[in-house]
Image (cartoon, rainbow, N blue to C red; front, side, top):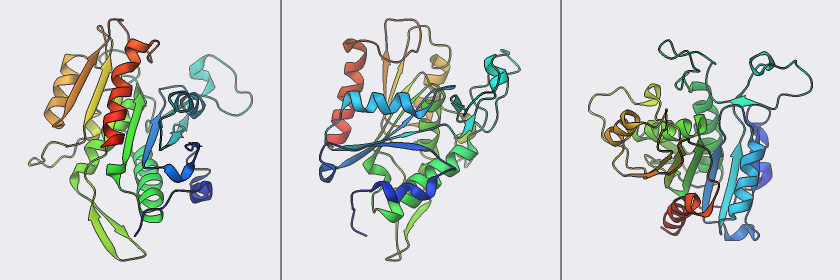
Length: 260
């Protein structure tokens, strides 16, 4: 089916299962690519909607997505009052038996079903005619893990069917993925032994003392993805970029993929 620019009403069916914020280009008709943003553990879609507005990528429809489950107030050391404001992407909040910290791979089945199944395949692809190679994913922390996991999953070559025309097309790559401090979840690696490497281009950004995107995590990325670009910042942690020097590699990656 021919591609058309998504409209806000195209996403109405997602609520209340998946909450999103849409940031259209100044002239929506100029849209040529889609950027989907996943916030970190304990955040919400609002901060990344602001981030998308601030970078103002030309011709890009940005979709900031809220984590699929709220974090119980008790885990945040507060009492329940008002609507939830802190969310996560995992199937559960579990502690790693080895470190005692929150497990970086709690399973992402629910998020995969809603984001890849409902938002990307049913809405952007089947309803609006886009393909996964029109889409860039951006994630921070746990959101970066989800972005990498979705890119890992779709290399299985599941067919996306155009229900109006009866046509199918194999969609096995995204236009690109940026992860900041988020490792690839092993639970989202296809189990088939003869799997080839994902050909989605990856930009992996992290601090020099990253605990989650350490050398073992980078080795796993190189094993599962064909095109890896690593950015190791001078700062020790994996916080979001705070200055021009830290942001330049990300903006360069965006420019290359969107232009391509």
